[in-house]
Image 1 (cartoon, rainbow, N blue to C red):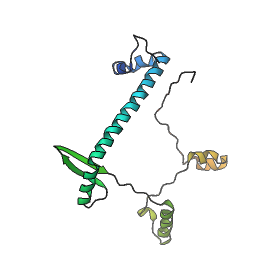
Image 2 (image 1 turned 120 degrees about the vertical axis):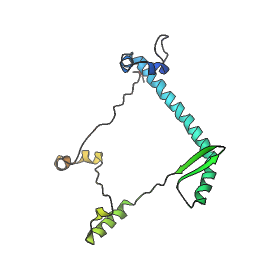
Image 3 (image 1 turned 60 degrees about the vertical axis):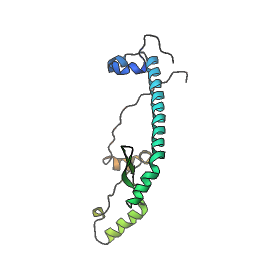
Image 4 (image 1 turned 45 degrees about the vertical axis):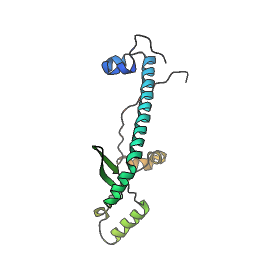
Length: 160
């Protein structure tokens, strides 16, 4: 969507107050939002490329350093021409929920408190909760708290 000559451009937004931005015509707000989304996508593409290049350059050296330290994950430091490269390979652990539940039952059956060993969390998927009969929902209602997140507004031209 073209900008009128005297209208603020995306790069001008940091010089405008929030009130001045709010007072802009809807079509201009739409154009600025679209420009912001395009700029965000462009910057993300560029960041992804530089991160891929850095990974390609240092991946083998970081793996070798990790192996030399007897590590399969974690952080290592390597130096390249006076630049310290901190390479982190995070460990991701997944637990089999059914097996943990069985272990909790064994601990409980042995007379011990499973919460001494496990963190136990109960969750109700919102879709399931909404599909329950009213009587069942009422029983759970006191255990449920609903909050909202940050509001998001997306503008579109009417003809889309």
